[in-house]
Image (cartoon, rainbow, N blue to C red):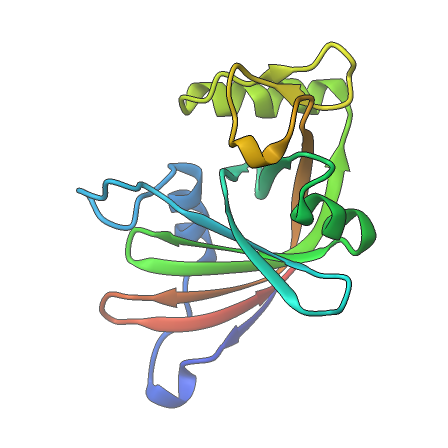
Length: 174
């Protein structure tokens, strides 16, 4: 991992990546009393090259973000055409932006693990019998009918901004 302290000129220390992933692993909310525990924003690339940003019910699991969507959604069409994307989330005392490539997941064991993780977080997802994705009793109407495709974003880089003392702004390249 290459670490660049973007706050060095201001006398800020580098951010500790292990502390960030510990908070991501714990599902850290931006504040102890946050009602919306964690809105995660996915940015994909439209066909004309412009950005498309949308909220997603992504999960951090096993060192990567996972999201699901219908094949006909804009984000689904975008990542099928160009897998480059970024995902942004606020955690306790920090904002995190991760860049990487979205890869569709069809391996049954991986689909089972991520469906179980979503279920443990309150969305009763399970692998679809077709083996192509996941299903659940409900989802956002814009996702279209199940099965929904599952994607993993393998981090290529991350920028973390600390919001509390001593502060910090660090880029990580993996």
